Length: 80
Image (cartoon, rainbow, N blue to C red; front, side, top):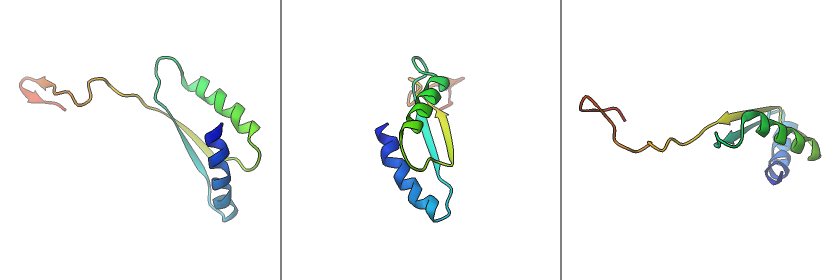
């Protein structure tokens, strides 16, 4: 909620100047939260914050692979 309270007024300034505002949300948790729960929470917060709302909102699901940075070989060739 705090992030929306800070970001929405900043976006509104650009909207008044004719720009479209785009908010990108990142969900890095693939085990305990899903896209639907993040979207529901955002919609609830969006309705409670007064003023302009973003023109577009995107939710990007990301997560870290524990193998990132590890060295893997496939027939003696590095694949990462």
